[in-house]
Length: 293
Image 1: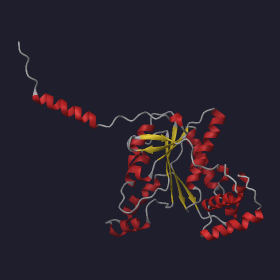
Image 2: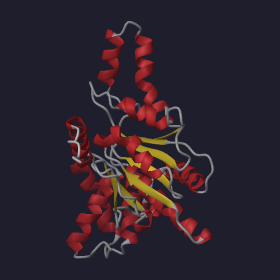
Image 3: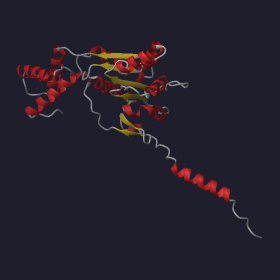
Image 4: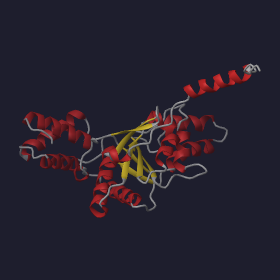
């Protein structure tokens, strides 16, 4: 009795299936959310890279932004406790502590949770501006977790001809399924509407219905339920920032020295801001031979 020859078509199909299996990316490994309180999203996996030590300052050192600080803390604390909360856009002048406030608020809320409930469940996940189109994949990684997540995009803005803002619009509202209950989106930007004025003006001049074109562009920022504005600080606020850093780090210098010195520093920089105050204190500590630990 002779065996029949294999069907060449079946053999070809099997080979194609094997090749497709080899080309298909492996399923992403489950993230270890207990490894850290902060992560950076890598869309190549997609996967989350734990950040063992977050570059942040204590919230008590952020001066001159009291109203924004209190509003962000309240919104973040509500979200961490499972209560309704809003996506947040922190916009305004550069160097005023927008991104520092987001990182400090997460740490402060986690400290309160640990003190009251014995467990910190609020995680911070940074997504880079160029990876915004991968937001749906990131949300899929986080949805089933018992933790709560703040997705953080620093310095978010869109240039003329960039249509990726449409992906963000859909992700913020969650599409037909709605935004997952355990995810909020925080973004910082120098632009209140995230889009350059010339991009909006171009739409106004070329669209059949200019009003509709403008509405379509600015509706992105409307997806953020809470807007926090940051404006240029006064000289008193700037000096209070420097004084706070000097006292916190125990720098061995008197006010009669650092006060005129810090004002001269801000004059040479042409600006007064939290960032300029911090840069001055770093320079001062280096000249004094002291560490900022």
